[in-house]
Picture 1 (cartoon, helix red, strand yellow):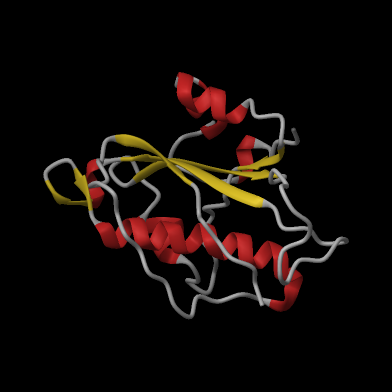
Picture 2: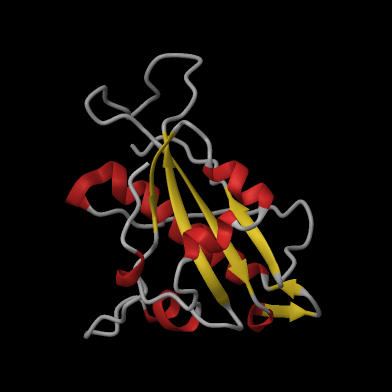
Length: 165
């Protein structure tokens, strides 16, 4: 599994991969044989203030302390899905986050809008990966939470995405 160098990301936690591997259920997820790459999202600021919400606001001891993204080959039960090409197959993109209390709406409860923002980033990464340099943007998104998202917790985000058409 290729791993991005840990010194080039500017996240609050200096080694996010080791940080997550120190938690048994995260280590088990990261040992999945279908993972083809684990990336540490770059949080270095850009000169034009692009992506400051994620790169600055959601990158601190009290907000998002660590974040990694894994790229996996999906389990196939059928052939190609609509919009998928054999030379450019869909991959699953999942994200692990370590959340602090600076994203609370209620005590020990992560604000749903923050979770929507994070999910939008993860799905955007998946769409961008599939589209190449053509770009990808969120037009519409609907979320239903099964239970409240706790802060001071590790979160595994698995976007359920359809084909990019």
